[in-house]
Image 1 (cartoon, rainbow, N blue to C red):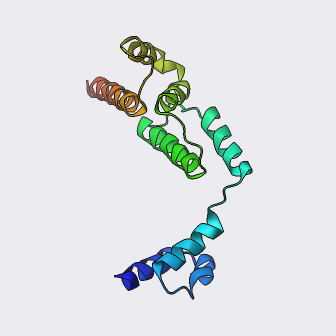
Image 2 (image 1 turned 30 degrees about the vertical axis):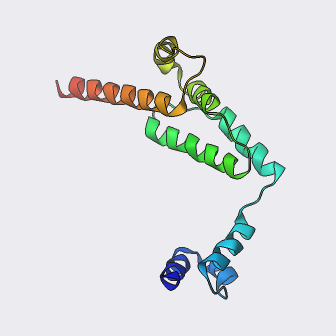
Amino acid sequence: MDDNAMSNLHLALADSVLSSVAKKESTKEIWDALTKLYKVRSLHNKIFLKRRLYTLRISESTSMTYHINNLNTLFSQLSALDHNIAVNERAEILFQSLPDSCNQLIINLTNNVLTNYLVFDEVAVAILEEESKRKNKEDRSASS
């Protein structure tokens, strides 16, 4: 099984990267070498990712699914650098990244909360549902 995994890794890597792991004899050795090469835990990386996260804004033409995936990627990258963002803060970051056209949705979601915080996944689901409703309404208008 290890040979199969090693073959898949070799196929997935660019030639310039493959030369760095060609002599490794197990998937663990390949993974460790790749981690050493590409997983930089520097202050620079953490600051860069936090700046991207806190300044991220969605444009009106970007899909919410893409935007939420982008946010989740940034959260994961920061977690890999030992900087975890609390669940309620993730929801707040999602809200602040939305366009002004979502202000009413934000008001509705925050008014209906019985606790002092929101959960990112629940907010994301509500936003995706709202986007779906808007698209369905636009599709019906366009077909009429």
